Amino acid sequence: MVVWSDDIRKVSRFFLISLVGGTLISVLSCVTCNGFFQYLISSIFGTMLWMLLWGGNRLLGRYLDKNISWTLFPLKRFIIGVSVTVLYTSLVIVGMIRLYSFFLVGSTASVIFSLIVTLLISLFLHSRVFLLSWREAAKDAEKLQKESVIAKYESLKNQVNPHFLFNSLNALTNLVYEDQEKAVKFIKQLSEVYRYVLDTRSREVVDMNEELQFLESYLFLQKIRFGGNLKIEINITTLKSKVAPLALQMLIENAIKHNVVSSENPLVVRIIEHDGFIRVENNLQKKMSLDKDSSKLGLENICKRYEFLSDKKVEIVKSDNKFTVTLPVII
Image 1: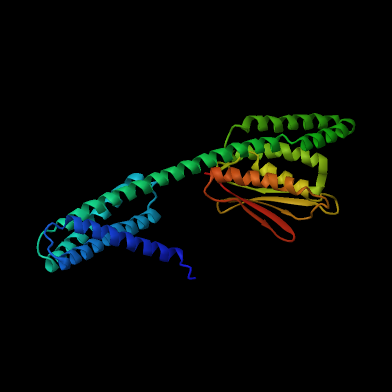
Image 2: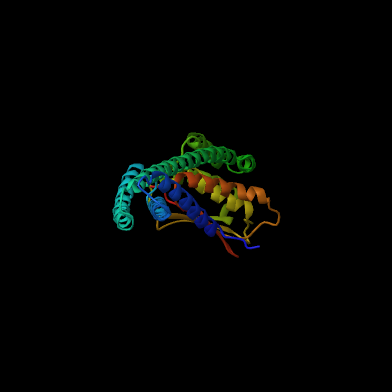
């Protein structure tokens, strides 16, 4: 049993429809045909006309769909589509009428009738493609909106991290007995962190300058906990650019959560601006016991948020000794 490919099936179906449609329309509309030969010639021309007009306009329509988006440039796509269809159809009709008159002298009613039917079919196909494109665009917009809502919810859960608060309070407990002045500053910085969390929970993006000021408070708390075992290097000059709120903090927290931080193995996190991207990288020294689900949650959250905010994707690269996340700069 021979299995036909999809292309062969489509071509065969198109040829069969053209043959049946062209023959039927030509026979019914050829009022001057007399005898089998004239009907045969009329049917051949009807089929050819059907194939050239219907098939040609479909191919032109698909070509235009690939190069001009209905959803992004609907008016431009409509004007160019109609212009190309009229021009192509006119050339085909002029050529076919002359050829038809040469072989079969008499009325060209079958050609004109076929033209009207084919134009109606072409109009239907253009309208169908237009409506389907808008429908897909509406689905994509709804999907992105749902993903944005989910990402915001997950982001909020990650932001108010009970483990971070628990570790901060533990560090504060020890600090109260050791250095009361530093403990007061610790409390102030902790309040700044959670105030920023509350202020940005409903915002899609924030200025890079705001994010970096927040990071100062966050990193002060982490430095109290880890001391010189945690090294953070930040080299960002484009302070007027935008970033998803707490994205950088989440990447630093992810590095701390899943890597050893000790005097023997200090953790180094670098935040670097380069060629329209913000690269966050850290040396890789995994902890023995890791929660795989929690390790993916923060990164998936960031990726989903940036899918909504930018047409550029977040890049995640993991090597033997380094873990890198690259975020697109939002202008």
